[in-house]
Length: 115
Length: 116
Image (cartoon, rainbow over the protein chains, first blue to last red):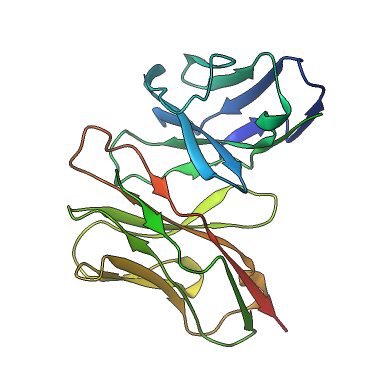
């Protein structure tokens, strides 16, 4: 079975540009998570969707960040305008349901560098 | 809020030696506990989880962990490591009783380096 698929794997862009990260969760999973990983702060949950609905976006750092899930098989995380401090690895994860005993399955991440 | 402390940021060991990666959590209520592994340039993969029952949990790749409620610890162990175990290991906790039961709180990670 295919795992969580993220694209692009790497993104390098200049400050001020719009960045869109994409995620395809595992088929049949109805919970989707976006995380950011940095050396300083570790893994941070940005936003959580359940059945395509944003449930918890308290981790979204600023209004420059937005996330959507138009259907069960696709989600985007957008940064506009991007800043150098947004440089990080962004992970998407999915799980079968919203119970905490279900493991989260992670994609391979998007390594974002803002110059 | 819950917190997870991984006491060692880096653990170097020689191949075939035993290893223990330490994890302590702050919650005093019932928790679910997880260990994830991250290989270079990859996402996190679940190694093992503790939900209830036996305090000794066995996972993939020969790893096991022991839940100690009195010590609020969930240390990860392997009796004999291989070069291929070189990776970063993350301990995580969730609270099944709260409204945010979906939320995983991760530790900062422990980089395990296995040397020949």
